Length: 387
Image (cartoon, rainbow, N blue to C red; front, side, top):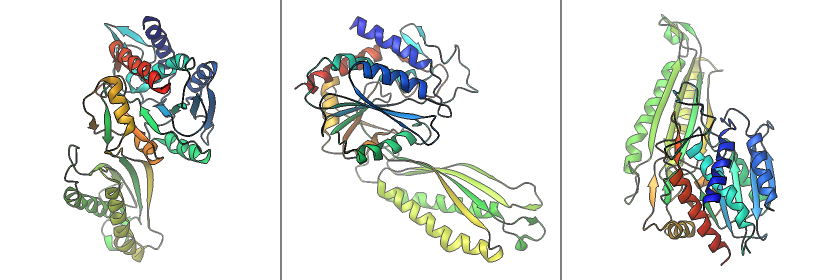
């Protein structure tokens, strides 16, 4: 275990050194991982985004065919600007059994452990495929995973299970809410504030839009599943920002609303989107265009991340529970890529080293003990893959 742990920490040091903030490229890190997995005999594919500056990595050990398991993690990290770090965030610092650096827990620690274990997996007689999926831009809407899933469908790759190594303190997580983010832009008609009837006040229509969103909150409380395990148990809506207008005496020609919802069930998301669409098409737009035909409302989807639905039958949850010796599974409020893999037909569980309490903060860290526990889980997984 000592050599395995030291090698994993060395790799984590390298991975932290790649400043893979979502706004920047991840190609150097992905190339490094691809080389290491290729040296283990894995069949490696890279899938670039349209810009050519980002790529998903998908690699496979063992036999071809359906079934098997995916070890998945995202390569991107959140920015460090305006955060008060005690050390360089892109240089791994070990202090008192803690490993400090951006991405150490979210989630390069898991990626390092999984990649180092590939050397040992390659020496086993695997009875089913073992896949590695390392994606880009999870932090800004799971863009990488959303583009990877269609590629897997197109190639007929049908794994049976997935372990998403997000930081859960090695707890077994079987469910989380979805996360859908939108920016809505209102384009009206400016004019003098003394004649509001001659213009189309985008700020006022934005306010009406927000009030409709808030009115849906009561409906969502009533729609909460009776046995919902979440806190709060219903789908939430949050208005994050409102922008618009230029002065007290000017009819606002433009306005913008940024909002999100976190569905506990997919039907809630469809309910909210359908309601707001009807409100815009039947009330807001006709009123705006009655004054100014070119007025419009444009919705930009920032990200629609599927929730991980709790399933009675979940082979991945049961497997990881045995590997870590857990007596039960939990749900969490934060989102992951797990729901996208679940939509592909896999049973999915979230379990990885580090605490979400450290993620996205200055002086992010993962403990050495958490990395050690992750390696133990992955070692025991090897025994299952040869059975």
